[in-house]
Length: 109
Image (cartoon, rainbow, N blue to C red; front, side, top):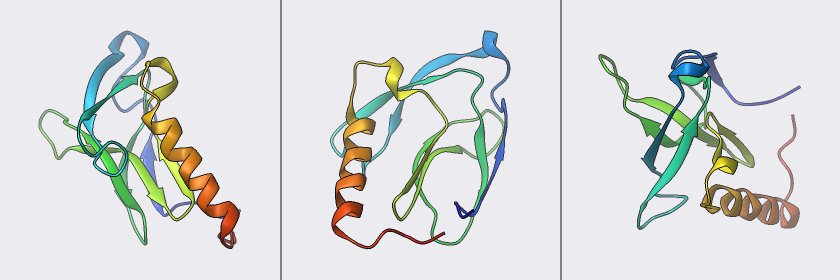
């Protein structure tokens, strides 16, 4: 099927009652500012490999910061809900990937 070389843990941050909002540093997406993120029963990315680039991380008490946004070529993986904020930077970034892919060869699975 294809996809990204990574390992994800479901509900990493807890159940729905553990949902939270924060801001993230995501220089490739919004170079000059932090961006809002809403986490609801969110997974975390435990391992990345190959060409997977981490776009954003969130602090995790007692361990290394957890990747929560990644990219591998024209594939984008996000562990939070950007649609629940008024900030459209993740949507704009995704659209830029689609536009770029539409003018270049799409990665084969």
